[in-house]
Image (cartoon, rainbow, N blue to C red):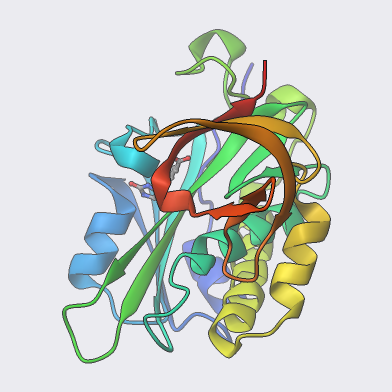
Length: 247
Ligand code: BTN
């Protein structure tokens, strides 16, 4: 039988990551951890939910996150400037790869196992106050039955033979996230250096779907600003609806 994955001891998780995250909370159910944390959290806080009833993905897509199947968490941080806000997402994708070393990183921040997506990142900025804030939301498929997966091309840690202890995994992820977000906030060049090493999209022939016209070509690199470079031209993640292998 498939074991439902959920937080066992939130206090222990909070204690273990207290150096990096001042306030770590868990709720059984919420619309979206990103929305909730942006509305109610302070920088340095984390919200973990068993179930999201209105989980959101990139480009206005839905992110299905039933209880027991997904690690859904959001972390709120101050941003040093409004420059390079998008890099917070890439940093979070790298944090996922740090704790799932078998993972491939597909630009900008999907984490794949065996070519299928098991984790996604949605980061959102709030520029309304004096200091810009960014909420970084991470959804990781941890325990699914194959037949229940909500979209084709998806997978889950358990389906790829990776059985994790939920609390330990969450602690490791929050520590890795803190490290990668610090690199982002400090403008540490190692962040994008490590990203380029991990990103399996570099070197591939791809097709970008964009509102302003599709692009096909070979990915040369990812810039320090997180843009993908195809045949000499850089494209930013916000303009790209889909990135697929070129046919
Ligand atoms: C994507 O791949 O399109 C991004 C998915 C991001 C999902 C996470 S789950 C926690 C946080 N809350 C949300 O509503 N979305 C993000």
